[in-house]
Amino acid sequence: MSSATELLTAPIAKVLAVAQQAKFFRGLADPSRLAILEALRSGTLSVSEIVAATGLSQPNASNHLRCLSECGLVAGEPRGRFVYYRLTDPRIDELLALVGELLEGTARSVDSCENYRAD
Amino acid sequence: MSSATELLTAPIAKVLAVAQQAKFFRGLADPSRLAILEALRSGTLSVSEIVAATGLSQPNASNHLRCLSECGLVAGEPRGRFVYYRLTDPRIDELLALVGELLEGTARSVDSCENYRAD
DNA sequence: GTAATATATCACTAGGAACTGATATGTCGA
DNA sequence: TCGACATATCAGTTCCTAGTGATATATTAC
Image 1: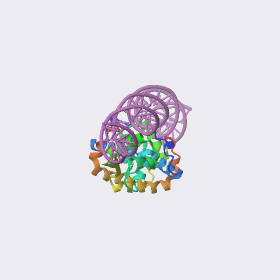
Image 2: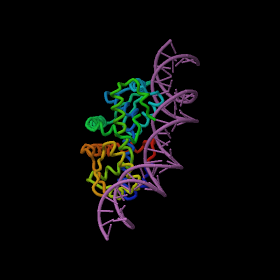
Image 3: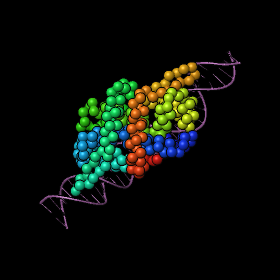
Image 4: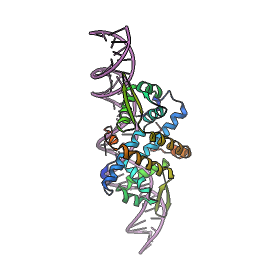
């Protein structure tokens, strides 16, 4: 795994910033979580709506939502029996749009990445 | 792991786009790879320069570079005994800048994400 | 109060991926 | 050609994490 112990030459502050960014991108680096975020780009949704939109199992969606929530990507607001989730920052939408554009141009080269399964 | 089999309700094209984005973000979701990208933001570097800048072991850096390269984030050009790597797209720099800004504001909430170890 | 619904949590499993150390390939200089 | 250097690949280990199914908690409706 990626150990901070290997990054000894860099200043502490930079290591921390990098670790934080890595954690942030990890929130985005899973198809299920991206599907959730994609669904939330069009507006606030309850967990069951997210489950319906993504096809994820309820416990699985709940787990991913917890991660996304703790990572600050989404926020959940309980209303009665429901919990409504939304993107916390419009720049997350920007980010997804930027990457969407980026990948339209580099689709082929990214597809050829064999290090990770397509899943 | 994230299985496309769980995302049955979404259109195929969207599933593929999401999988591609997830793969892209996975390239960014590791402190070692981010350290490499961060080093490359200031310009082209050879592998040994990257090793020196990040403190990664040579085989480890090489492996991460292969992934980054196959994912289209960096490109390597052999020149004699050296291979010089650079970011393939200026928008990758944009992306990192955007996320940097984003995290300056949400630093505390992201730090509280306990789903993944700080590494 | 009791049943039904919405969400979260738990125990568990399987499969990846990030390391390390050793080794292979390839290129330059003497 | 031979030794030194730069990079890539291989084998193997450890740990993480996404998934499942069962269950707990909480809120509404009857």
